[in-house]
Image (cartoon, rainbow, N blue to C red):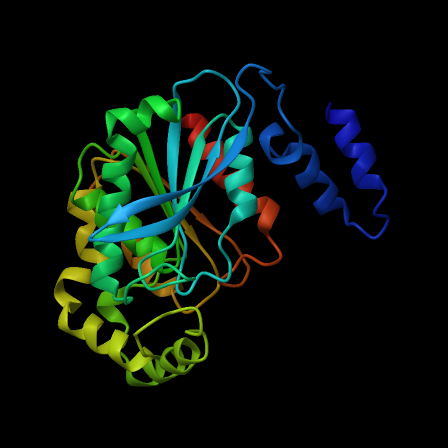
Length: 293
């Protein structure tokens, strides 16, 4: 299999030796399909997840095999143009189920979007995955529940883990620190303009309103202060070269100071969406999942 992967890579003659090396060393789940259990093949289920009177649109990537499988709750950012579907596919190939859902008020899901509401939606998705009937229906093991979040989703993942000690592990990828978005005036204006230009899929919320909400909750939503609550979890922190870099560094330092029991920290020289390091991101997450006990 390794030889076939390399042969495929060599077709792209413009690839560098570094890129070829990454292709050779990536986990098999990143670069090749697994054997299929014909009785329990992999599948994709379009479902809804209830949250506070709204049925949130969701996609459940179900792994091959009878299971029960561990499940990754994959949380997208705001609004979620990069929803990390390639990451979901790799995680499924590695033997995990993956649930991706759309917060209330985003991407056609009913309701009005707020950050507080997204926190509630995440908790309801966890509740859905732990429901015994859903665990049986989707061949999942509710005791092996991992949350992986990117950008706003990274903050939501960390928040949920701080309030739920039974979460098996949490991966926080280039997370926006909602407690600090109003802290520095110049950075705030840059971020505010960017958010204002990206809210077309978001219902009922302006960038200014979201920043005002974050300011009201600044003390509770500063993820650097969550280190003590997170220290007992297996934690993966993945940074990019973006506006969240300094806060992610601060969270890493806080967890190290608290002697976190299982901390993995990776810095990647790329943009916020990992646009030129998608294989690298998948490799980091898959290798971390494989290390979980």
